[in-house]
Amino acid sequence: MAKESNLELIAENKLGIQKNKKRIFELEAGVSTTYAELMLLLADIGENRALLDRNFASAFTGNRAIAIDNINDLFNSRLLMIESLEPKTEVEQNFQTMFANMTKIDQLENRSKLNEKLSEICARVQEINPMLQAINSLIAEANESVVEQADAMISENAEWVDGALDEKMDSASANANKQGVASNLERLEKLIEQSSGAEEEAAKILKRVGSVTKNILESGDDIARRREAIQADRERVVANQRRTADMIVKS
Image 1 (cartoon, rainbow, N blue to C red):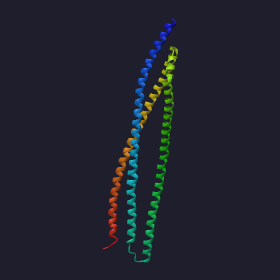
Image 2: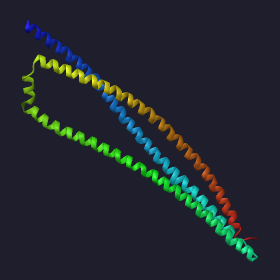
Image 3: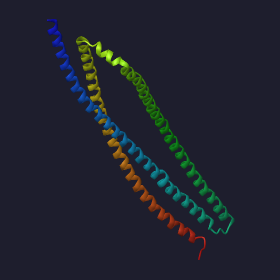
Image 4: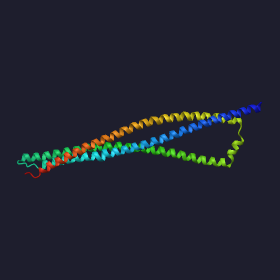
């Protein structure tokens, strides 16, 4: 009777082991898929960061530089126009000097405002660096954890090769196997739940990344449109400079 009961337990364990094996296979596919999706997401996020860098360069070192040049040239044209005046009285001379000073003050006020905005931009850009450093630290910690795990597994593998695995099998029993099957099932159920949660979270991130990508591309288009407007202004500035130059030598 005991032998028959033991045979039933062995058969039960075998069935449980096969079911767990199926769950493992399905879970492996799910975990691998989630990993691939997360790596693709990371690539998309990296592409977004590259697009943001491009937009920053276009807006800051491109559009802003041209726009500021336009303003500086316009101020210089004003100063040149004031300088080309031909005052005939002391009052007119005072006006010329006073108005030149006023224009220079306008220019300095404008530069001061530009510096304030530049300082704000620098401060905001600097805020990004600690975030990136924190991410780098997180990656380093994760890598170190993997290295430590590998070290432990190397030692354990050596023990298995030296006979520890054979000893485990020699001491196996139907009851112990049943406990192992139950433990494996419990762990698999938790992993399946975690895998499902990871898939849902990856889907949420994908949706957010897609939305961010759309906004970044739209921002890039807006920057390009602004570039066209700034370049059009540049043509008007050049035309203004030509008219100002004509004031230097009056016919």
